[in-house]
Amino acid sequence: MAQLSLLLHAACFMTFSNTKKKYLVFLLALLLSTLALHAKGEFADSMFSGPLAPLPEMLTILNEGNPADPLTGLGSVEGAFDLGKYDVTVLQWSIFLNAVHVTEGNKNDPRGLYPQEMLSQKNGISPLEALSSLEKKEIVHDYGVEVIEIKNTFFFPHHYFLSVALKILSGDYFCAQLPITQISRDSAKRYCNWLHHGAPSFQELNEWTLLFTETGAYDFTNGKNGELQPGARYFIPSLQQWYKAAYFQPVGKTLTGYTLYPTKSDLLPKETSSADLLCYERSVKRGANYSLIISTHPAIKKYYMEDYYDFYFAQFNPSDDESVLSSSFLFDPQSCFLTTPVGSFRDSPGPYGNYDMGGNVRQWTSDTLLTDQGIRALAPGGSYDESSEELCSTRVCHAVDVAGGPTIGLRVGGQAHVTSQSLEENSSDSSSFSLQK
Image 1 (cartoon, one colour):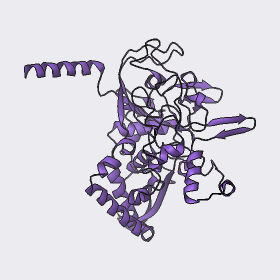
Image 2 (cartoon, one colour):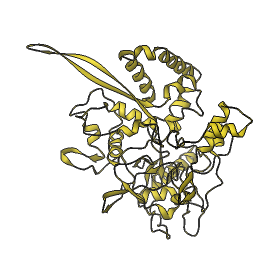
Image 3 (cartoon, one colour):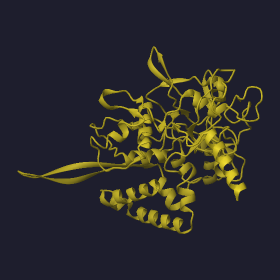
Image 4 (tube, one colour):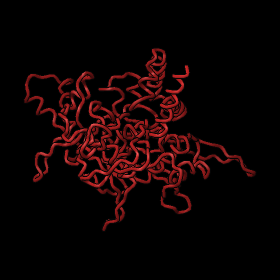
């Protein structure tokens, strides 16, 4: 019920902050729409599952001990493991920041879980917003009463509450479903720590509550650098694990067992335009979010989302004169969202059912390289800002700065909930039971 907690947290925050008057009407609409959705039975279906789930939905990657891809030597994994069905979303990261009591501008918080760039809505950066307020608190001492000011910050996806209340945006909760970016590799580890401890929520940051993000799957205490710990329940997947989930075909590929692209094919599928993808529910939704490189000198590219914004502008500015459209609207990548909601390409899943393994945003892995620029991490998959070549299995060893950036997101790995052996045993037990009956 973390999403419901997000709504209630928003209600309390807005009620007791200085922004009360500004959001009062909006808050009433939000609560009424929430009750209406719940009454119609749509709340659980649309708000708490799939791309809008408050915590990552995990899929188990089986076929333990599979061979490596002879083309690259990658993809062999001994044991079963879990991997997120989708990239971690803006909504999920908002819930995380609120749960672990991140306060904007708190210099005493060592975690650095959000850079200021994360709050920008430009250049493909995650559409996250924040509201801060000051709360006065009285502390009684022997010598008298001390009044201190405590700053509170509430994080939420851009336009999230408007879409909950009115559902007027294109698609359901568009910004909430975009993949989070601008998170460093250490921030990704701290997110795994929080999941490892059961995703707790607390209202105060102190030495005890700090342990929920500083220990668990990765250890950041006593000057440690976030080393992976034995028994980690959630973790950043290795390149081998990521590669297997993206390209290994457990059935149907008799020669190598692998495909060149993470859409169960050696060729990219015919791509659905972004306008059809996001505006027409019944359209076929194939492909991936990457750029068409028109020229390298000078650098000219066409972003996948351009067609969507062209269509969106035409809907609100109808004109039969094409010159009016062209002169009135020029696609500007600095002011438009360039990522697509996770899982939008529903007809192009990976071999195990994971979405967006190629394109949209790159994804952190645990593998690193020591270069002249320092330690860099491998983040495969390509992004909205790169060509389709970066989606290919031969291009996965792409090293990036561990500080992250606008094209890098996170897909969480975890301990397998089932194994091939346990499935076989359960199947055998079920057969025996049915025969006895």
